[in-house]
Amino acid sequence: MRKDYIILALRSSGIIAISMAWFVIALAIHFNPWFILTKHALSDLGTSRALMPQIYNYGLMITAMFVILFSGYLAIKATNKVETFAAAYLSIAGMFLALIGIFPGGTKPHTFVSTWFFIQAQLSVLMKAIGVIRKSRKYAILLFALFLLAILGGLLEWPSVAIEEIYEIILLDVYVIMEAIIYS
Image (tube, rainbow, N blue to C red; front, side, top):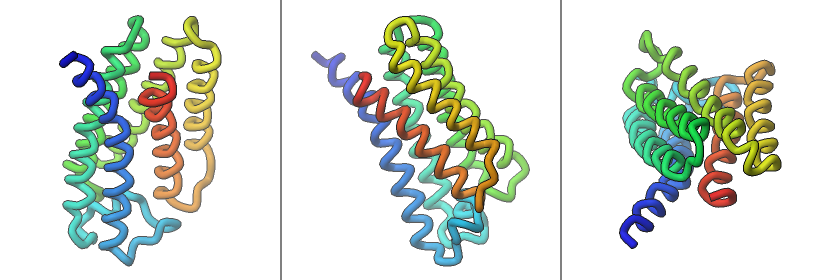
């Protein structure tokens, strides 16, 4: 019985991560009226220019903990090595998310850690698609579509980095929702 509660908590951590991320972004935007969605990057909310940059930076670090916990859920429910790799990639993405808060915009490692957050997260989607293809072709196709939409998003010209980041975050949110609720 106790194990069921732990699994439920880990599973719920994905939805908490989504909620936390959007709350942090919205709160940071609220405190920074200079921020223009079509002009800036979300990471600008964590720079020295921002009013209370700790909202964004610490918020990402807290969100990262929930992402890592959710990756534990994916590892527990994995039925093969490829699905386990998907969980590992998401865990690494969570670590890079925390590093975005540790190395905010304007610091030397920031571009690297923010880029690799998205790459690792999307590799998780790709690995999950490969891992479930024998169990559920429909689900694998949905995951491949999410991955391809992410690749396409990286090739498009966006009005701002923030808009592109939001697009990619929404794709990751869909992945987490599918894993936590629909295909759990």
